[in-house]
Image 1 (spheres, rainbow, N blue to C red):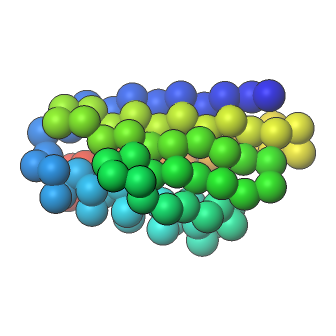
Image 2: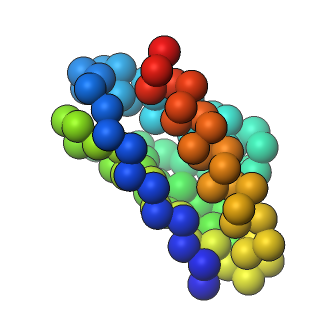
Length: 92
């Protein structure tokens, strides 16, 4: 199992942090066919070969994905996309 673990500090209020997380999830969903759902302030990700979560705290977004064997070769690309999207949405 390969893990992507990203922490991104932010200064967004709760509503904007949640909007940022939703934007990221929509992008990942389109690009990598990942399904997600909210459970409170935690977004759960799932698809065949991937599971994980995005947790929102008052000053941090924490994304953790566990990639199965088939998606391991795409780890770098997925991680780059997460960082790229976070750069865009947190600065917006």
